[in-house]
Image 1 (cartoon, rainbow, N blue to C red):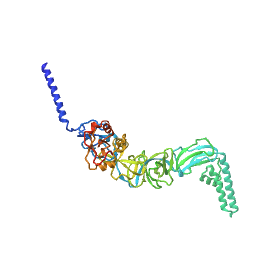
Image 2: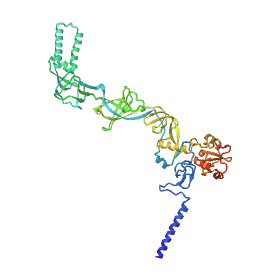
Image 3: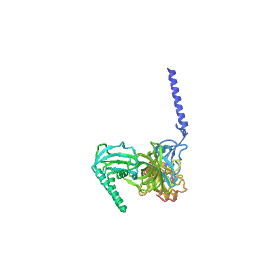
Image 4: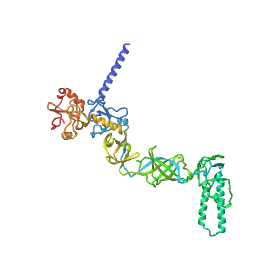
Length: 498
């Protein structure tokens, strides 16, 4: 039993010694992390110039120190006012995505959807010219292909016989007059005949039927309803033995050798000039067709808030059918300039800014002039140079981060509760600290560069600089406690508070 107790005590002592040795030997070394990257140091997110070998809390703002790994952005490098330096982990958390600004060639590809509709100039609406009944009906349901003068139905009505009798009597009278008086005015006779023929056309009789009636003088009690041209039956609203009234639509037939394509586009998509070439693709068929923009002015649809651009396309094999949806792609003209994604532009109403990645992990805001936004593309007149990388995703959170850091450390955002304590003006800093050595915050001991000084206070003839308002308030509460920690740390010639 004693041997077991002694053995356990020895093992415990060895474990304690190994733990102490590990803490002692590893305290000052930067070991690789589980991900294989070497930890360099920890940095204050509000003041990147503050470094620490251990994790903890920043002395000025109370925020957690952030780790910096080998190969990441140099967060201690100077950042312009409003700029933000982020580690790779923070960029991934925010969802930062960048794109390169490229020169615009004056054109952009517009992709949208369209709907096939019949060409109104090739659409036939056959209406009843009298009250009557459907005697017989041909096998021509919707979707049937019909030819010109093909009989669609046989209609019966009292007006048909009387109109035919009047026409036959008129033709017979003309023929007798021509035999008795060959010198009769042929022009007047032809005009009178056209008037008589027009009455038959109004009833729905075709040209071939009128010519046949004039030739054989055979009067029928019914009328053959024929197709006015080649096409496809879109609708049929009659059935056998059905009674119909004058003026109702009996058939609708469309010549689909050419069709219209109505494409939905937004007003800022570009300039769609007549004759512009377009490519129409039917995903279900796996086929593409050529089309051109028509000369008609695009109409605005208030329901979809889009412009209806009309395209004209040939339809070989009648592959394009009415109400079919297709994909439309064509080139649109845009102004010259630098092109960036429209999502990169943040519009506050008073100004437009984009965030540019000036170096690895460092993002700075830029005021830009936007020549126009065309769909998902923005044309920039000034503010960004070709080849620069702009933030297109996560820029809203990046802007919030920039504003938060500015409100916590920027000189122009810190409120002054004491008239003697004023934010340090940037131009005064530049005049007094250019080329000067770094100064220290007497409260937290942080080394401050020119851009890090937020406030200054005079005490007993000396000027003290602070990194934040919290350090300044601590100093004002117990000035004697912190005043003896250093000499006058203001740049020479400052002359008191800034």
